Amino acid sequence: MNRKSLVLPVLAGLMTSTLAACGGTDGAGSDDGAIVVGSTDRIEASKVATAPLDPAQAYDFASWSVLHSTVQTLMRLPRSGTDPIPDAAEQCGFRDRQSEQYRCKLRKGLKFSNGHDLTAADVKFSLERVLRIKDQSGVWSLLANVDKVETPNDLEVVIHLASPDATFPSKLTTPAAAILDSEVYKKDAVLKGFDIVGSGPYTAKTEVENNRLTKVVFTKNSEYQGDIQPRSDKLEMRFFDDAKTMEKALTKGDIDVVNRGFSPEQIERMDTTGIKGIQLQETSGQGIRYLVFDTSAPVVKNKAVRQAIAHIVDRQALVRDVYKRTAEPLYSMVPNNISSHTNSFHNEYGDPDVGAARDVLQQAGIDTPVQLTLAYTTDHYGPETAQEFKKLQAQLNASGLFSVRIKGVKWTEFRPAAVKREYAVFGMGWLPDFPDADTYVAPFLTKDNWLNSPYHNKTIEDELIPKTRQEAQRALAVKDLQKIQNLVASDVPYLPLWQGKQYVAARDGVVGTEYLLDASSMLQLWELGRTSDG
Image (tube, rainbow, N blue to C red; front, side, top):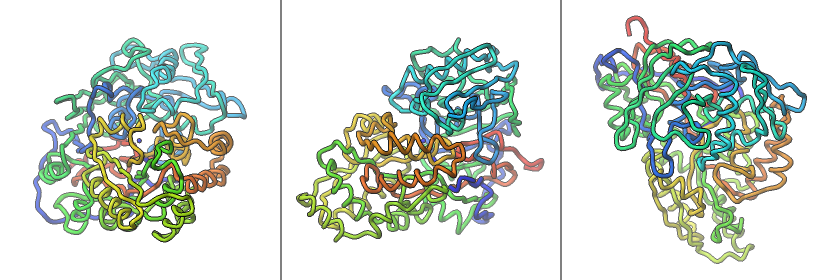
């Protein structure tokens, strides 16, 4: 999926500016007054991913944003903060000192949006279903440590873990642990299409064109039992083909809120010039961008090649020239605003140094220039991705040590090909599954990592990750998490590039934007409302 000091800032805004200029209208967004959220994300069904809104397959920010408002989990993140609180559960907690047995008692009277009762059996069904289907998206890896689920009665669930994991309550806040109706969903197959049956604060009606989601209408769920109190009875998400069209819709008043999808140039212009009636908020972000190396591919199997690339890449130039400082250089897979972050790559490689890269290759007996292809997706992370990879290509080729070509591929083809290890080097992005450094470490470095990476480090897998997960007081895990980051910098199975800042643009009269994103950057649509004169 995406991902700050462990007290993660909500969108109170490091900088909040009222944008005045350009004109605008008093458009109401929706004919029925619903608050409309705009997005350029693509949620589409394909031959490989036939069920983009099934929790057993969905593993991206866009799909999770829809699911987050329509399904319930045993636990959820609070309005602000990082400690999980009960959602469908009345209470949950570990019942042993080893953090291996997790017990929950459900709220009484829970029902799905179709009126069916929600019981402990549905929880068991849902967790086991994700692990049984084991979709190639990798979402199942969040629950891979679940050994057995028991249901003593209709209201109690006992989850036995294969090994201690103090982060497990946080994993239960993700849509991977969504509670589904066992009368609607099959236990061993995904629900194709775009239908959702959940027990969350909203129901969802979807509109689809050419197997791509174009609009979702969220309506307050009368069957919902929980502590969330939606500010709006109705909301919409509209999906646009490009950022320019979305900006026009915001300016006209056809949409009310945008939280992602604008280009760096648009953000820069909106900040300096402004749009009448629109407020822009900026805060530190959690999303990271990085290169992935298939460490079994002949061209990058020797880590000297990967280390040489680490010596050459100029992150400062990337964020300055491509991202217009809407991002900042990143020297670890863990963002610099999480307490366990350490600048491991800068400590190891320093500033860009072609001479050092040449020395590394010569000492390893690598002939130059190294022929290399960098692959990236053309339609998932924004149009500036192509510029970013042209910049990386130019940096590596200018060294004289590499002869690089780049290859852009549509996401529906790119993701399956990456999992099959068809690319020696490729670019990916990541948002946190939950607000803990573990989500930047374990998904990439465990045996069943979500990228199907062949890289394995037994010290990390067998010693350090298990040790960090035993620490209920997460500050006690910092030292070992930093050891992991240093080992990654030495071996370079991944090369962190930058982390983005977060922006929310909202029309005057819309309230609740300071709570729009939770501590894992997931949308809390129920926080959005209008002032009485909005």
